[in-house]
Length: 118
Length: 114
Image (cartoon, rainbow over all chains, first blue to last red; front, side):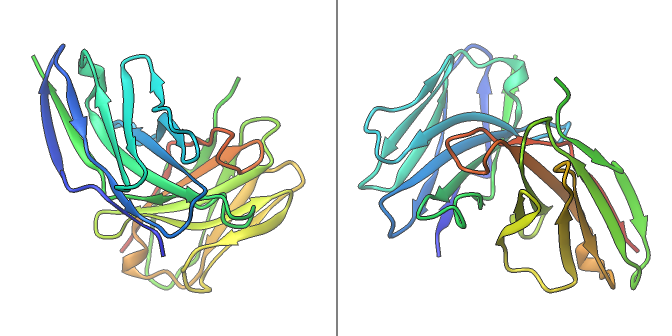
């Protein structure tokens, strides 16, 4: 079974600084997607960034970028120019695309709570 | 456009009762997935429905069931509630349920079993 590990329960960053959240995963499959989701106090999960395993280029979305190391099974999220609105729980997630039956099931890590200070 | 709507937002039930939660997906989305979020177990996949058919199921007991209607709205039902069923239940909708299309989450239903 696939597992996703986030080893940092909490992180803190000063406004305008850069922070990196770590995620490792375990899988024997070669075709999959990885995600970072943000869950603010409103509880609604919001997709931050998505990475397809077969793409070597790291995904970027504005201030958010990932460092995808397929061989090491590592998928870290870098937030640049941190803003107060970035404070939230961040979840790393994995999904297999072996078939449509598995492709809808997200496996989440335990989350990292990010605090942003002035 | 309207987002994913979950009702009710909060619910308090007694052990042994049953409960039904509702999820209205974004218009046009045919896939609805359900997740349970607890402090101890984190986020766990319950099941996914696509075009009224259950396409994927997580490792939950048979007390947890769901269905999807022709308008893609989905309900999940938990029978014979236990204290451990207290959780935030999230649903997500997408066009296809595949990871190349974004899944949009609702704000969840907070279920408390007493």
